[in-house]
Image (cartoon, rainbow, N blue to C red):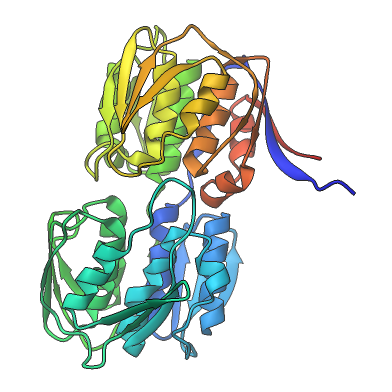
Length: 424
């Protein structure tokens, strides 16, 4: 019997209109779930997105001994009272790069941890050097073998000053969590400033931590003896929101995007407005539409508050249809241009030179079978199909499921002709 796989089948040419609500931020929820390990008891997380990465993190915590109760589609109760293990299951953590988020919490609770080397989308190296360098300064010894990171702090975690060579989100998060229960004061210099960092620090402070400066390049953490369970709501997903803003910019009719803080998309919105997309603030979100042509511009991905790498692919779709030439510079992940070849199959004119994509705008796309090489590229190719002539079949749907909840349902709710189907 032939093996079946899922694809997203898109019929282009239908405008989008109406409203869509984004879910909680995947990149925040995963770290908040990991942080519950530091506060034995029952922590309740609300506004949790229902996607496969969250399911994977739930399985990781369950394997460690946590009990997870799904109260409703977006509310989890995580009881970490009986967590006894500090060894994470390799077959689960290798599926996503956020797996390293349990490193800091396990070290804070047990003084040791075994965590698989990170996996996830094929967008570039998953370096954990900065995680290890920062935690080493806090007194952690590391050994790597058989695909696992073996970490231990025989003398306990001791606060100190750490300067990151790059504002790594993951390294900042691990240092936040380890430093919260370390002895003494920890200072993170050149820390990541992403909204997800602020969300994590907010929940840790609600638990009893003493963290100041989150959202700035210098974060100070006064170690405390223990943390307590809390109830906390996950912030809205700025990347999902940006994806729907890009979709609205492609097809013109007004779309209301709710459920997030527009300040988290500051530079993205400025660039989109420069491209001819009209954006207006509304309560809890944005109203987006376009009346004229798309205009060319240049972007370069940088850590927050710069242009997010997770919205580069969606923006490339817009620029590929702009009236003129654009340049996209990717500074975060070296393999994030793999989508360009797929978009070229649909009629785009994109040339890759190192970490630059040189884009010559075209009049339109033609539907074609394409494959999404990673989470955001898969979503971007679906957006391209919305405005393509004819039909577009996007494979690699498992990547899209990692970061989007009911993606095709939400697009259909806006008027798109799109469905997920199984094919041989």
